[in-house]
Every structure is written in structure tokens, then in C-alpha cells.
Amino acid sequence: MSRTRRWGAVPSGGISRRAALGAGAVALAGLGAGCTVVPSGRDAVAMQPNKEPAAGRRTEIEVYNNFGADVGSGIVQCAAAFEAAQDDIGVRVTFAPAVGAGDTVPQKLLTAIAGGQAPDVAFCDAAVTPAWTRLQIMTDLTPYFERDGLRLEDFYAPCAASMAYEDRVWSLQWDADPNFPFFWNKGLFEECGLDPEKPPATIEEIDACAKEIDRVERGRATRIGIIPWDQYGAANSMLTWGYAFGGEFWQEGTNLVTPDDEPVVAALEWMAASAARVGGADAVSIAPPSLTSHPFSTGNLGMSCLVSANLLEIRQLHPELEIGATLLPYQAPATAPGQGAWLGGWSAFVPRSASQPDAAWEFIKWLAVSDEGTRTQWENIGFPVGYAKAAVNETIRSDENAGIYHRNLVDMKNTRPLITVNSFYSQQLEEKVQRAIYGQVAPDAAMQEVKALTTREAERFDRVGEMG
Image 1 (cartoon, rainbow, N blue to C red):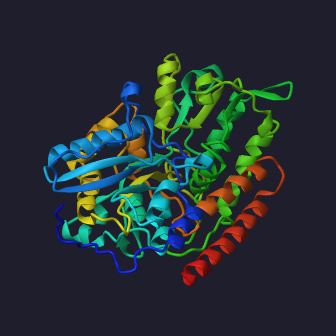
Image 2 (cartoon, one colour):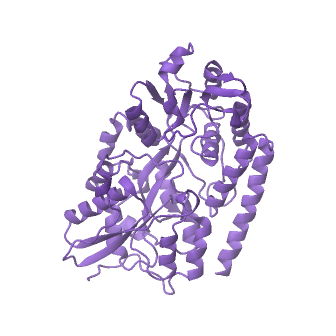
Image 3 (cartoon, rainbow, N blue to C red):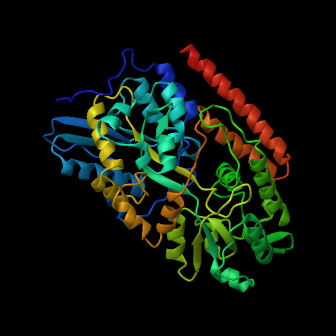
């Protein structure tokens, strides 16, 4: 197979097995927030996450596909469309699912890298970039990026921030998942004497609406205005409301975490108070234990963040529900609705030991930047795109369901904390926020503990990195 000029040559020595396997400790932040997916409705039998490369191509690349179901099948469709767009590169798609808690550890990928059998393209949450660059897992894409005239300012701001680290570009964000828009049950608002056409814009207004909606019977909350501590997990809830209160979670450009930032602590105090108002988090009983859809579907929850997969499911299963969509309410020192939004989603990168980095770049550039690739991804998978200049953004903006997600993305500034121990930080937030919600620890003490433990882990990571 022929090989074009290598702009991103692999330095001698490759990647140590120790470094690659050590990356398991800083695994993907994952799809915990529930990426914005528009289900395709394809026959499940026809959905395959694997694909052989087209025959007769001079160059072949391998793409590790960590997605199953619709998304995994959509990756295959995108690979086939890329092959149809040119006649030089064939694409093998290999199913490489993540494992572990929350399906977040890309064990097959890390094992392949450690064994010198890395794929040419892989997917990651951009929050792993600080750690994975330190572990020499990712190829520096800056030469390709600059050669082809791409500019970070042509991507939505949080995507650009996630793709670049220490002034170099390491990945291209093809799935810009905006966490979160805010939804309210118009019928329930009207039933409770609230204006169904006037959603809350501030946290105080959320509380005022919740006061009218909450219904506690025999010590159980059978109807509730909002469950702020469970917006797709405690850690995601903390990021969402911490940002909505105007807080910061780390000092950008450093490895210093700031969960004890005053607005962040205030957000956790509000979350804990919201639980106490209805008798505690364990007193919420708005849905049967067997319910598999989002509790908003019961009609007993007034307000919630929703990813579009849940929004679409609710609208399909319960068309009688009148659902309003708006930007996330805020609290000073934040200054406007939507400021609590933060970026999730997936990026494509080239492992540092990939055998075909040039061809790999052509594929991820097509997927994340080209008009054909971004539209193919949208039509076959349904993720908002990170490239602001993509023509498909006009289609996404006008979509009945996806429009609010695109609106959320346009002015978004926040990302997950871009630090070397992001996954550890998230785990600590998940645990300590829950303890605060259940009244086991004061919110300020919980955040102080998160800071101390994460700081210690970051220092440990630095020591290990220096050792090899």
C-alpha cells in the first residue's frame, strides 16, 4: 500500500506499554451525560458496528468503533460514504466497545496501543487529551491542521478549547454534545397555576415554580418541580449547576482544580436544599421502579434537563405531553440563561503509533469538517457538529427537536475540566455530591474533600509521568 508524505511522523521509540496501560486510570469521561443522539429507526438486525474496507484501495486504515446500536451502525455508514467520496483509501471499522463502570474504559484500544497494534483512528472524549498527550498516546495534528488551512476559530468555542492543548491540536470534534437545554411540562405548569408559556429564567424562578408543583404525601414526593441533583448523574449535575451559578471548576491552562469556588459551593447548597425541601432525595417517588424511560415522561416532573434521545422518546411515547424548551436558568454571578451549558461529545484522533496517519487524517477531516462528512454524520447518527462553518448547521438549527441543542451550542463557553486527572475528578464529584445531597456531609466540606483528593491524584500522575 502506498503512503503519502508524513506530516505527523511518529518519534522513535513509540509508546511504552506502561504508558498505554496506565491510561486506563484516566479513561474516557464517556457518554455519561447522554450524547445528543437522534435515533435513526433502522432495523436493529441490519445495524452492524463492523465493516471491511472497500476492495482495490491503495491505502487502508482501521477505525476503532466504540459505539453499538444506531451510533455504531452510523459510524459504518460514514466510513462507507467516505470511501464513495474518493478512490484511494479503504476503511476497516472494528467494533471496540468500552467496558467498566459507565462503559468508559476503552480497554481494547489501550491494549492495542500497548501491543503496538494501534488503529489509525479512534474516538475519545476531549477531556482525556491532557493526560493522553502526556502519556504519548495521541498524534500531534497541528501540521495537518495548518497545512489544510483550518482554524480553531472556525469551530464552536468549547470545541476549539477541547481540541487544542498546550498550543497544539490533537483531535477534531465531530460530535458537539451540548449539556444541557432546559425543558418544562406546560400542562403541569398550567395545572399548578403557573404560566405555561413562561419558563423560569433564574434559579429563584425555578424555586418559585417548584414550590407550586411539589406535592408530598405521607412523606413521599409524588410530584416534584425539579430534581437538580440528578441531571444525568451527580457529577454532571454539579458541572451543570456550578456553571449556571457562575462558578469555575479549574484554573484554565493549569492542573489546579477549584471545586471549592464559592459559586460552585452555592450551587451544591441549592441542590441539597432542593432535596431537603421534599423530605430528602430518597423521598422522591414520582415513577414506578420498573420505568425505563426518563421520569419526565410520567408527567410528575415539572422541569428537567434532557438529552435529545430522551426528548424524542418522550414525545413518541407520550405525544399528549406539551413540552417547552429553553436555555438553562442561571444565578448570579452568572448573567444570562444558558451560561451553565458545557460541552460533551466525541472527538476523533490518530494514535501516535498509527501506521497510516496521513490517510487517517483525511478520514477524520472529512468526518468533522467537510460539508459532505458533517451532513452524512448528522443524517446517519444525529450529533450536532463542532465545525461552525459546516453547511449542515442550518439544517440542525431549524430542526424541531435539535434546534434548542444547536442554540445551546452556539454561545457555549464551558467544557469538562481539561486536566490530566479529569476522570478521577469526575468520580470524586459523583461520590461527594451524592453524600452532600443525602445530608451526610456539608456542601463546603464535600467540595474541600474533592479538591484535596484530586490535587493529590494530579500530583501522583505528574510523578508517574516523570518516571516514564
